[in-house]
Image 1 (tube, rainbow, N blue to C red):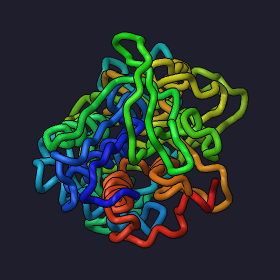
Image 2: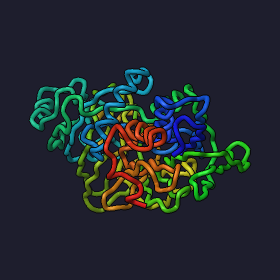
Image 3: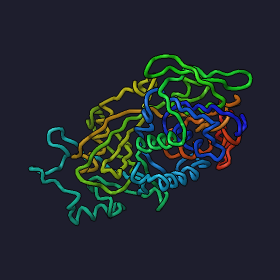
Image 4: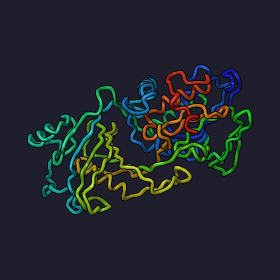
Length: 411
């Protein structure tokens, strides 16, 4: 590591939330001097083009790994307070629970089974006392009034007050990127093709400029690899694989209360686009957002290998429809809502028994790793960015004990 008082050329590879938070905290580190320290963030396609723009945005004190979660959760609150995160990227505390139910069958011509003729199906806004009694009997909080009582088996809170919050991932990531730019970080769109190094450590980064297609090389004294599932493409020995995840965004028929739901829904045979011949159980996650939309995601898959860039990700429309049908089977508001987004992204997994992420030195002078955050990238990004700023400017982590996440234990 070069001294903090020396000229530094810091290059961050990857414009997802980990890379953007790294740029942000590097520009906020006490040792940062824009007259002597140049920070460049290289992103192949667009800021927040991958999972950082398509995730659910759940923040939780009960997330993992436990050595960085408390730090990162606290930093989320501080960022929101300092930069108006409530208005700027939808930061708010939310309720969180596990909901178990038998999904109502969907008739493709008539809609949900049991709905009355003439559109006079039971409205959750005007729920009768019998229906409300069923919800209470299942342990459902009174303000979680956008799930139907039919088929409801039970509800259990997963967190206490102040333990769960949320952000809008795309707005959060792009906002943090802009805040980093305001303090001197430079963002370049270009796909990295090589990290040049000598016996003394890293020397340069070569990339293909997105606009011109030209190959360019910039000097580097420090390189932070935060390319998520694409980390292996720039550092082949990284033990990172990718899982594809589909999600949808729905505008419900009315505003719904602030809940994040982990569901377990039993579906009848012949349900959904796949028309499975046997009953099945699905576990979509449902996140109500302050902009009056609801995000829902399904199980991951490994059917399509990781493409070259985020711009090449394939969306399986049938998987999106399965999510829509599943969440609609337990909520009138979601069943009748407008689907505005159908999307897919890839999550990075560390292929090691102890899991990840990997944060810190790689064993190559000036080369740092910040990758492998699985589904908790948004949650753990501020903590990771702050730690990376400490590794780069101070040589080691100060804000949390992340010895167990040392990349040298995985490489």
